[in-house]
Amino acid sequence: MLQVSSTFDSGNGDLVAIDGDEVRLTIRPDAGDKHLQWFHFRVAGAKGRQLRWVLTNASRASYPAGWTDYGACASYDRVHWFRVPTTYEEGELRCEHEVEGDVVWYAYFAPYDEERHQQLLGWAQEQPGVSLECLGSTLDGRAMDLLSFGAEDGVPCWIIARQHPGESMAEHLIEGLLQRLLDPSDALAASLLERARFYVVPNMNPDGSARGHLRTNAVGTNLNRAWAEPSMEASPEVFLVRERMDQTGVRFCLDVHGDEGLPYNFIAGADGVAALPDAIHRLRDRYEEVLETACPAFQRVHGYPRAAKGEANLTMATNQTAQRFGALSMTLEQPFKDDANHPDPEVGWSPAKCAALGRAQLDALAAVLDAL
Image 1: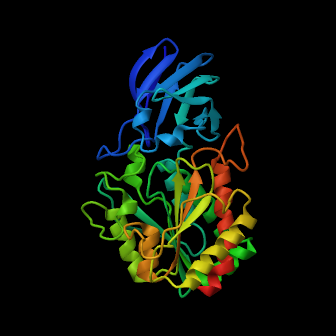
Image 2 (image 1 turned 120 degrees about the horizontal axis):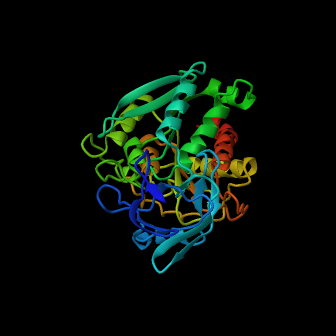
Image 3 (image 1 turned 90 degrees about the vertical axis):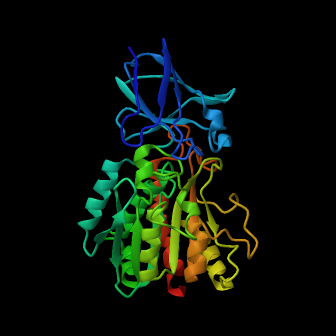
């Protein structure tokens, strides 16, 4: 007998019906009912079966084009995630998978759950010179955690991730970045720590992450549209982080995301911020050039169109921090799908590849840090 559940951290997938080897579910919308796309559920009792599952409301997804050429993620141990055959037909996302384990988990992308998040924080604070600070609480009462380390009078560098909670690849990247940056045997990391002060928020949206949301927090706020006028009532996550940024200053800010549609890793900058000096735009170009060399999975051909000067959306983190501080501020996007330039049918874009891209950020930052 098949049993289906999503009542766990980051779970999303409401059972509609089970008919033989077929399971039909719906994706539960985010708070505010404006967004849905993230799913994460488990199926028990399917071992040896040719399981079919269907997400019946996939056409309502925030980015239905994201289903094209997409393969869902599956795991038997929640450590190794692999891709399974998936199609988008007649408004439904459909998967067929010959199940080999007693229980199998499926997700939109490999999750980064609360336990792993807490373990990352615990590991980091045990490293020399690292402080773990709670900036305040979210609307669901979760901690807004900030890691800080490096030279006290160094260049203030902020790295934030997962404003959109379903973009779990962002925190996988942060894990790789922190592992290298806090590695005492890495000479480049040691050099950066002597010249910069790092402020890292691994998860900007812990409520949305736990609730299984794609883009919003507990009350339906898209945090990456709240940076102009954040409030403790609707967007405490941004309010608390921006308040701390005002105290530390910002010369570098990397906001890590995932893109549902584009099968590439790329950067979007603050091109539309009219007051930003040309020298900062040149530093962004230099950062990308070095990153492309350090990590072949990063590329500069495909991405978002550059905004015209004066047309920046200042509700977004990258634009607001560039405007507010004159900082080199960028959004780093990763795919939910495979990396089209280096396809890997077994795992697609994966946590290990996210971590490798995270480690490569150090090479790019080292190339521009002295100019900040």
